[in-house]
Image 1 (spheres, rainbow over the protein chains, first blue to last red):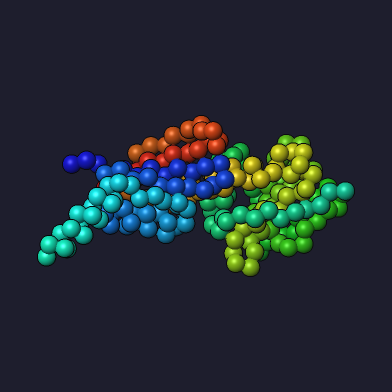
Image 2 (cartoon, helix red, strand yellow):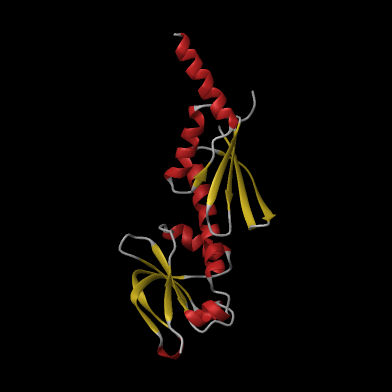
Length: 64
Length: 138
């Protein structure tokens, strides 16, 4: 199974952003929340993997 | 004549601030109840500061630098305006303090939440030097 990796990038002003690899769906939000909880991340962007999971979830809800 | 000025930060944790300054080569003085800053030519700052970098540690500076908590508990930097203009103790310097602070804070959050540290990299970008910290989920 692909390892879930988190990259936090901090610029010269102390602003930070987070990048997630191997996560899908709500898992992203939980990790972002962990780091944002300590105010250590000030920016996050959702990747295609997040939306892929969200779309799959929507489709499965439509079918039920 | 110079005067002290207050520069805004978002830093709230004294431990990370002190660690950041230490990493930058300073040995800050700590005053739990705060102390007034005294600078060149009798210049002073009357609001108390809890963290001070003595002038002797600031190459070419006229006055010590202080960090004092505001009413919301956020540290604000107090820097002599001439040192800000002539001794490199400017917004860029304060940004590097904030960068080192954020690195400490991020490492502490990751440790507390159980993430596995995978490495640190310093990268040069057109926007300046960035620190990359990598973690894995346990």
